[in-house]
Length: 236
Image (tube, rainbow, N blue to C red; front, side, top):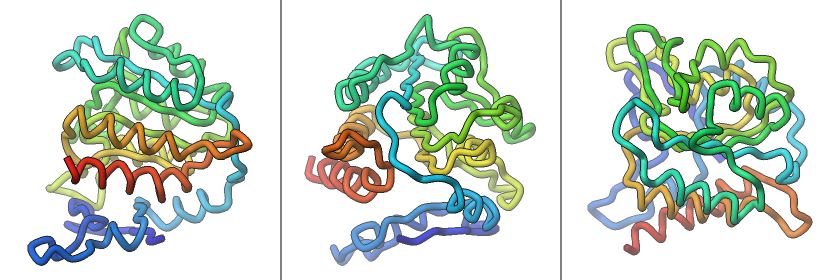
């Protein structure tokens, strides 16, 4: 494992994907599982939190593909179907995927899968948000929330870890906001991702998330599932 704490322009680079690709050698992602932290204090706090495995009853999947922001996301429904099939849970989608519904769910759940439009705001980063049916789920409200021991968030939305080229050291993107609000582990994307690729990665990730006793483990899923999903995409 490598925990990256990049600064300046390095915050804009996909350090986890470094490699001599033209020579067809193993890249860094074949050798190490990389994670990012915005500050060392955030990493220390996350490592000190209780990391006991949980059951799928602690998990909520929220999807909103028909918001008024951006084009309709046709991938949301099949993506939530993959998550619910792997974890045997009930998802919140369409009419139920509201700002209040999301906050109510996260008052009782510690594990989150969120599939929707992500809306970064570079001028007012705390106004960045996720698009729900009735409006934006804003970063400033997430940080102010008092969720009980949040553990994991899979942010299946574009640009959730994109920083600001003009002031990279001061950028607060959507994934960082989730970390600042208390989530120990967050998965996000650095750019727009093809819907088919997302479904392959999501399927492989959640297939490896539950062990035989039925406990959830995001580290296990990241180490095995993401690698399998990326290899499957590469083969295609």
